[in-house]
Amino acid sequence: MQSTETQNSAQPDASANEFPRSVFSDSMIVYLTYLLGYLALASSLTATIYFPIIDLLAAHYHTSVQAINLTITLYVIFQGIAPSFFSPLSDTLGRRPVFLITFTIYLLAGVGLVVNTNSYVALIFLRGLQSIGGSAVLSLAYAVVADIVPHSRRGSVLGPMLAATNLGPCIGPVVGGGAILASGNPRWCFAILVIFGTSALLLIGLTMLETARSVVGNGAVEPRGVWATWWKLLRSTITPRNSVVHNTSPCNLEKASGNPHINRLKDSEMREPDPAVTADPNFGKTGRGKLSAPNPLPSVRLIFHRDTALILWLCASPYALWYCIQTSIPLIYGAGYGFNDLEVGLSFLAGGGGVITGGVIAGRLMDWSFKKTAIKAGFSPDTKKSIDINVFPIEKARSTASIPIMLISIFAVGGYGWAVQTHAHPAIPLIFQFYIGAKCTILHQIYGALIIDIFPSSPGTAGASNNICRCTLSAIAVAILQPVVKRVGYSWLFTILALIEGLSGIAAVWVLRQRGWQWRNKRSGQSTGR
View 1 (cartoon, rainbow, N blue to C red):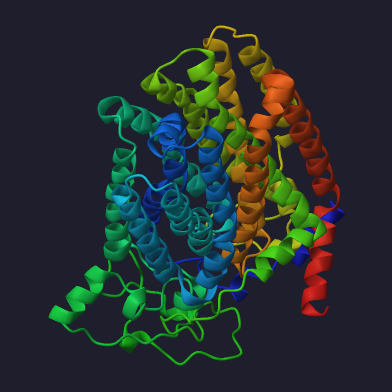
View 2: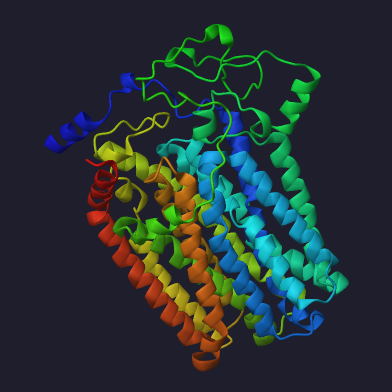
């Protein structure tokens, strides 16, 4: 009883902060959810469409399978590096300009891959460039969710967003395998990515709203220039509108004319804000971002804090495990089971179905667990209000049920290795793939959200640190995958991976639940000079 009273006394007075987390309408949040899911296919679709064509690429470019695997390793390395530049940049410059820059790079690289006929060197360079353009999208998407949705509702947004995103592992191999079977030319796979990149760039330019809180506050500040949609710029050119004042106050968050999905401010409704009101998320915002030199060091530094190191490991290790399984599927079902290219592509569907299912489960689990923890700790379960994360045990809220999931995973991953090694009926490893895909998605989504939760002022930077860790670990795993398989076989490879990932994950969750909040508050106190 006493602890509940203490928690209540620590919560900020609701009347002192009358600003909603965002003024974006529910319909706009739903649209952005699925738009982000579609855009994030740039990462998952681009990677997985490549897997069924590895053998064909080796023949087409007159090189070895190991050399083609090198392009996968390079792709994953750039997946880790690029977001550490682009994601922190989006915290100051804004989300829209960075999305436009990265997808322009992605599209140009895709065109180059279609034009390239037989140069392996060009293949390496252009796949690296394609990775640079498409790899930042997931951390940017997490940052957008952090901009517009309070902690208590993030699961309901991340679930559908990542379910849409995770269609990539389902359809990518099927599209790749189908294109190969129909044409026998890997350039058709790259042409499909060009079509996707063109549609994504148009959707960003025409419909994606700026959400960065450093630019538009909680969305009530009117974006200007490149931060406004192309459609809005076109309309304003044809029909000039009165300028909008860029600073807001609590009493002025009423619906204005213009975009029906955003409650913006009319000039007549404005009063000058009090500079002392630091809780105003719109104070000092101009609707334009600030260009700063991209600096990956803040993202790298996060890795060395005790609490963030545990969270990042819990993000990276399931992702790397799943990447190993995805990379090995063409060899397991192609050479091992004698599947043709289309059948190999279809064999990805089991894991892809698990990934989609895991995304939905993770979203509901996150919101249920957050509400349960909030009530137990004496906080209001109101999903419309933000909670001061400094006085809330977010680590416990996010990590509920993680340990049982990891325990089951140890047996599933190990069983998968022994099933493929002994050439069991293909239905058996496919069932294992479904569970492992779901499990890896649940853990990666939960702890990917947690790293964003504990750095609310710089979600792009936090998301980039996640990318660095998961992609670096995946690159290492893919690089050593085939040499280890040749030495010990799939059975012992996946048994070893199951024990490392499962036991270390269980230990990390236990320590995080016991000490994470304490370490976070100590780190926050040091950074603010308390």
